[in-house]
Length: 334
Length: 212
Image (cartoon, rainbow over all chains, first blue to last red):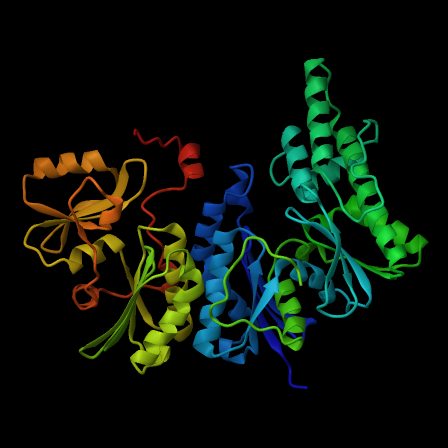
């Protein structure tokens, strides 16, 4: 078979990224321009500022990606782009860029769902084995997905309210930890003990999650302790909080693996970089003879390598868009 | 000389190709469907002109002010086209395009509604910019014009300014292109939108406050 080179484009939130991946497994070059330092001063991503940064960066990032690969658009087989979900203004820059390239160079255009991208970040670590269960955990998503084969997604459950990463950010905020707070809570948790009592949310037999109750419980606990004049032990609270998150995630995921008689698990999304979550899943998978893959830390967060990789399998699956492709802030993975 | 012109800064898509002396153009209201259909219309325009994007010598992109999201649609296309096909590119403001399209001996005041009593506006006399394009309170602009004490005409989207006499904007592509086409091209990397206003979050952070 002739080699297939996919140019991936990702701009759904605060990272502008381009990547070229060969045959869905070999990364040729990836460039990520992150805006974390810009948004830090606002305590979170400001959508209009993110959109402005994307258009400012776009040709620089594309240029660097092509130069690193020592390739031109002519060498590319097809263009893959995140069309949603995400921040609409941000997505539009990437989508317009992809459509323009597809039009100017007469290349196939492949629409990629952001979550499909996160799942396929694992394919760059190890070729996916099916059937599998994917636990997608990020600032915008908490979902359990069943995949029977490549590019086939069946959603088993998802969060009914906040995403797990969003919950980390809000808890970080009440503890006065600078944005983005997730990695810092993970670090604090590793230094603390589980001493605070917090409720396990949605402790039922479904595959769904809920994190807004847990978030409120932490916020209330902090406020009550402050009113009583008690000092919060941040390490211990982070540990107690993270323990509850882990219990909720592992319970539902392990149940799905058992119910569907699946022996392959992958984690996906920014929160998949969390060491506490990784450690617990490693332990449980080894106990239960489950094969597991975690995305490399570098590609747990948003990047175009995962979009180019997912784009390869979408390409093989015949997924195509024409130049009227539009971005959408919310859409189901299918 | 073949020139491609694109303006997506309002609810209208304004695109044109100047091929030798002939001007091919599309003016179409796309509103919130700009991102979906602009490229399809661009493809249509190239067909009309019987040209490929590669045949173009120079790109003129309208950088704003106007709809933030809208501006970025045309600008992404123009930047990517200029960068990948190695074409010359220049940017102009939407206010210039409006001023140059009106054939009048009077002072020309293009204006775009920016809500809460503010407008994006500039003041032009014989195609020269005599009051810098800016985000300005409409009453302050009117005060400036009174002091200027010259005959003037507003140009813009009259439906947005019910209390003013505003000449409806209709781009004269040939006229705009002829006035700006010899400007020196700049790197596609350096071409940026001209929003003329910071985001609210930035204004709050910098303590910038506009009196209503």
